[in-house]
Amino acid sequence: MSSPKARLLAVATAAALLATAAPAQAAQAAQAAAPAADSTDFTSGPNLFAPLATCYGGAVRSFFQTGGYGGQAGPYRTTSRCRDINVRNASAYGTDACVIFIDKTGNCNYWTYLPANSGWITVATNVRDGVNFRVRFDNVRYEYEPLVAYHAF
Image (cartoon, rainbow, N blue to C red; front, side):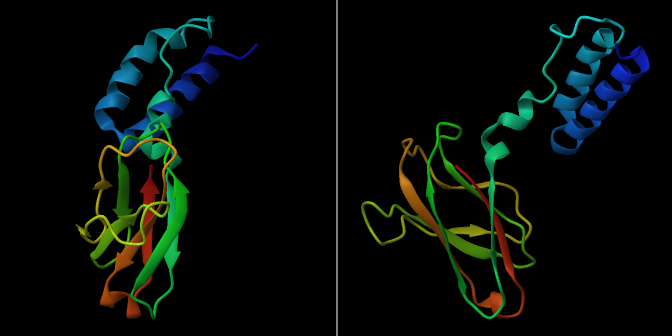
């Protein structure tokens, strides 16, 4: 049987992990979990890891070496986890991104600018589940720096 100190440490660790992604949710989760820390009932209380299973929880990373214009990431297949296709630019320079629905066309839907070190930006909205796609990037700056991006779909 684990001790109350171990349970309290587990709750504090989970709250700290959540604080890095969502401070308001972490405060609520920590506050809700505090009474459960003294209890021995492990079936009740908040699920501290539920926010991690959101749209961005299944994000995929793409990396392109220097010396190119960017490139294409994928193919990917949309899921029920997200309604939109979202991209986050984790690079030192801004870039343009578009989505190619590869079962229907070889052309981009439209170009979306992603600033350097951006947050999540929607590059295609209201996409059905099970649609195959690629994400295309275009920028001349990547002849000097690598392009790193994350995709959530």
